[in-house]
Image (cartoon, rainbow, N blue to C red; front, top):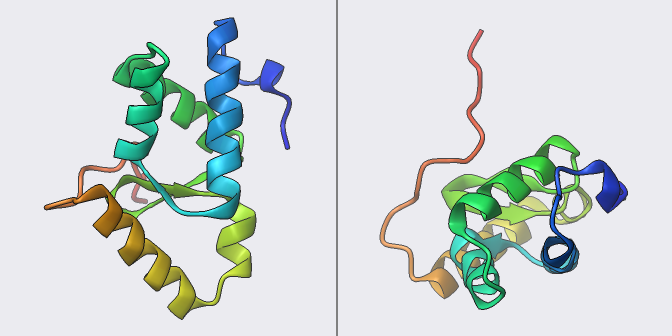
Length: 110
């Protein structure tokens, strides 16, 4: 795990959010909405959440799946494909998504 000091985290209250995001993604697939609710409860904006998530993705601490779902690379490697699809479906149902949002990260096509 990368040190929180190495991430683009500038405010002390955000270290709690980063720790909570890492804790949640290490054991489950978490949606953007779930993380946004966590941030709103702690007074952190959606724009700041986006920057935090991009920092975590860049540091390879979390990965973004389809529909703005996030998990840890370790969990992604350990889960069999059918179990992964089941967890993704559960996360989508939990979030009550009607359609998938655009990904935070943009894939560069060569």
